[in-house]
Amino acid sequence: MRDADYIYAVASIRAKEKTLLTDADIQTMIGMKSEKEVLSFLNERGWGDNSSDMSMEELLSAAEESEMKQLTSLGVDKEIIDTLFIEELYHNLKAAIKEVCTGITDVQAFYDHKTYDKDTMLSIIRNKEYEKLPEDMRKLAKDAMELMLTTRDGQRLDIMIDRACLDATEKVASTTKDRFLSDYAEKKVVIADIKIAVRAAITKKSLQVIEDALAPNRTFDVRTLAKSAANGQESVYEFLDRVGYKGAVEALKESFSSFEKWCDDSIMSSLMTQKTNIQSSGPIVAYFLAKQNEIRTARIIMTAKANGFSNEAISERVRKMYG
Image (cartoon, rainbow, N blue to C red; front, side, top):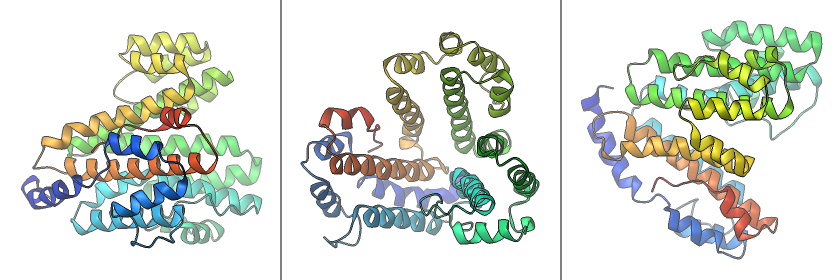
């Protein structure tokens, strides 16, 4: 789509934005007494099929399906849709290889990817029909399958496929002509690299393992970050402070859950810039990602309610809203 072609689509999205949950709505949900009360609140806001009998997963699945239909109906370029679901695609590849190699079935392990869902991915891996995968994934799938069959090392498999996913995301960031998509993809890689480095420092991973896991990005030198992670948490903090991520350091010093929240809020803040844009994919992508954030937050709140978490504990876990 050309920028001018987005004008109608953006107008449609502007109307949908008015239905998004606000930070005040989230606080209201946190203050509710039970999962059922939250379900009822969301149902009244148009989530689900207006049935009071829907479970949490049914409600959230219906919300995800509705937004996917909205995204495709607007004629958004395939490159954008593929980028939005790139993590789900690589995750399903990883899950399929593990299931085929170990024989252990985990019904919760797969995302409901539009093209490469559980059954499709399992069939490709079982039959070694790698040519049915996107071209950039074919050699990866073959090599990852051989690695798992030879070593049964799930951790190495995770590193291999997660790194490939980040490399693919960075490729989008550096090659796409869509400026917003480029900025979003770059942000995703940078945040992922920071998470990897922090976890590696905490678990005292070797420099080689860290270097294998980190993906080069255009924001900072990951080789220096890898060396910092190998030297421990304080070294990572110094690096992050030096390259302009003081907020990440402050969140980390508070708690790891605060850091996870900072990561998500950082991406959400970048989406907020699209509220005044009218002639690009930005507002459409921002709305879709904001809706995904809503769904994740609703799941956090309802799961916490079902397990007796305090309101304070829930508040620490919820993310900033776009609405």
